[in-house]
Image 1 (tube, one colour):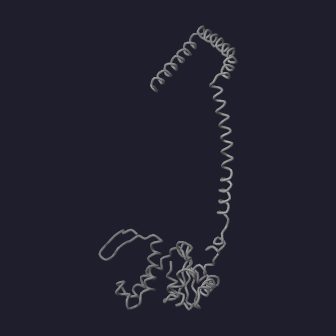
Image 2 (cartoon, each protein chain N blue to C red):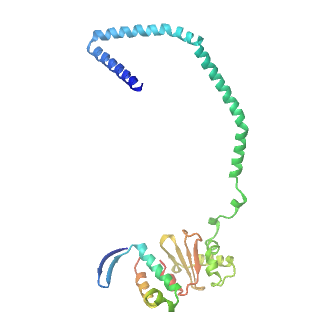
Image 3 (tube, one colour):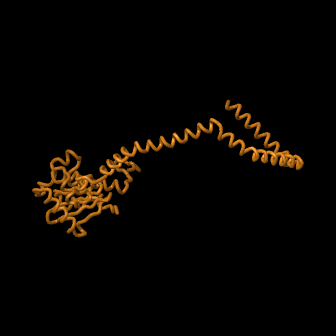
Length: 199
Length: 63
């Protein structure tokens, strides 16, 4: 079926092309074609109104009109039915996006470097050995070391890490923004020698 | 790391900046973690030898 249609279209296109080509080469034929077209268009214009009124009187036109009006009323009733569930869904979505108590808790980024380190593994592993009774004490000491360190006691390491050395307590603090705990802190047995070898 | 040449007991190696840093840190942590008596059995060298190697590596300017 598709092949037949393609063949017919190809024949029609070739015929039109041939006619156009012949009209281009032969002015007399072109004039005949033009006259035929003018006559044809006048006939179409003359009968268009009659054909339109005849179509409006036909059963097909009435059926289309009924279908369109039914569709409009169906759309209206559907939107009325969906209005209530839609409003409920919107309300649920807005309450879900509202901040909860958990979201009001301090975020990790709001903690100081000392708090992040002391709240991580460092306190359990090194806290008591370093002389701290609580995580808060350790956090305060780490923050103090970070803020009071002289330039000679600060080393910028690879991958954004920073090491601090505290001569008074013998503590090293390594701040690592890539680590889950934000770094670590402890008292190395080899003291400053350990700090100096950090890279 | 890339092995460039090997002659008897001598090797020529090429390290990136980060690789040298990792070697330094690994030696530093090993020296920190191991007790004196256990360093030689576990590392195959004394603490002093490991420290000397670390000092040599630390002389490389990584900046």
